Image (cartoon, rainbow, N blue to C red; front, side, top):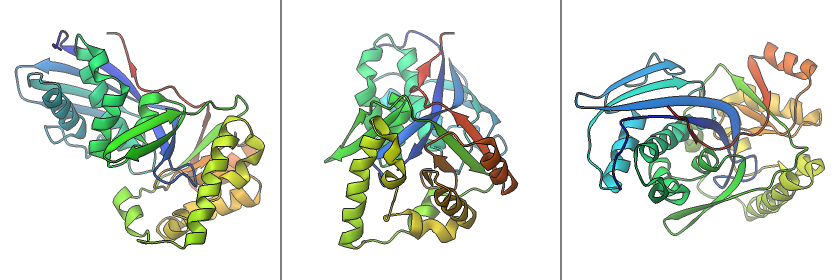
Length: 297
């Protein structure tokens, strides 16, 4: 494998992990994208960020995408160089929409685009490296593969399989102004859960696969959860209240990833979206997205 280009441009979608009962093992990509381009140089690393995170993301080698690029070059046995990175971020940070997974996958895809042997950095290899950074594959997998996925670990090795989604399935993202760090959201989870709750979630996760692929009419039951959302409710009270109101009205709503964004597995009507806007949630109604893409220069 050799580096044969000095420039590359990729797009990576936002993602929702968990999808309710599929804790750390299910995810979905959305039509909301970060655009990232790289130019290899002989100088120092420089990072330019516009959009989300422009005021606080690092602009040197400590930037996550730069770290991923350097790690991927190391794994592939390719030479290091100066890096000029330009990021147009549309995925909100700290909202449970996979912004860190998008950054990781962007770095991986950029290296793939720079080489003469992209097949050596295939989706399986990318998922392994992404999981090294992310710790679990439920956001990285849909960012790479698109659509909705089931992801799992066998020992230290991650795997993912795409779901064949029903053409009748629609989605709405509800994004608040407030942020919630993933570390904070995970810190409130118990070390153990009752056996009956684990069994409940196993049944609902299995049902969710059916509901997403063939039976959207089952989504209300299939999106019930007892493993994480109730434990996190105090850390994102506005989100918890909105989800209760949505579900009481018949909408299959879940926390997106670690929150505080909400994923509704349906297209909200304008009245409901307007009421939620008054609570501080902006709506994005749209189709599921394909995975990360290399954009021709």
